[in-house]
Structure formats: structure tokens, C-alpha cells
Image (cartoon, rainbow, N blue to C red; front, side, top):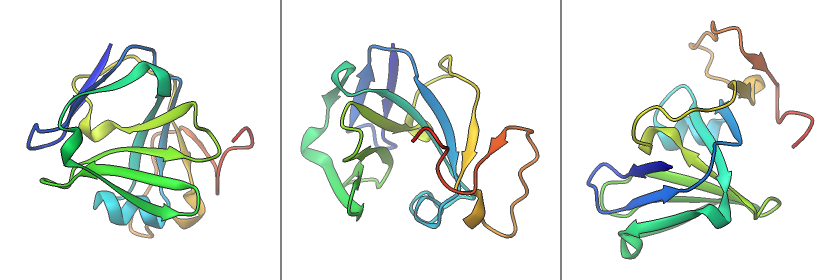
Length: 134
């Protein structure tokens, strides 16, 4: 069971499944929206995810034609990203997940647009854009 919440704890959620995919996104949108060198996401099955509280505080921002970003309207915490092309998957922001759930090996995406002041030193696989299977 994966559980998480926003900073003000109004929005709480859980996903009763394993993490399917684990990535660090270096695109300029993720960097700006997370205020960091990259954003880390855990992919879970949409039908295994549910909000426990705070649905009235959810705000949605369409950051592109096929990306919707969900965040808390009170504290601004990033909760998840949904992609129109993959409705069966939600990408949970690891910054809002409790604990350290088991996950697959991480990889980096959109390294071609990473922050020039950030070095990737972890030895994980890197893709200039999306990995070939996406």
C-alpha cells in the first residue's frame, strides 16, 4: 500500500498496488513546478488509486495538451500527473509519498533539457527525452 499527502495534510490518498515505473524528470515544466533540479515520479495503476480526503482542495493544471498536473489548492503540493495517452497510469509525485515504498530501478528522462547547474552522478540510465517504450 502506497500512501501520501500534501504538505497541509488536506489531501490524502493511497494506491493499493506496486510502483510500476520510477523516473526522475528533468524537463523544464517539472523543474519549475517542483522548484527543483528534477521531479521524481512513481507510476501506479489508476484503478488502484483513491483519495481519502481533500478532493475539494484539488486543483488541476493542464501543462500541455496531454498532461494534467494535480496539486493542492491550499498548500500547492504536487500530487500527481496524468497523461491522456496513458489513462490507466497515474504518476505520483514522490515528494508527497510517505515512507520509502519498494520501487523499480530509477531512470532519468528529458536529460536533454536538464538544469545546466545540476550534475547527474547516480549511474542510472539517462534519456534525452522519453524512453523508447513510452
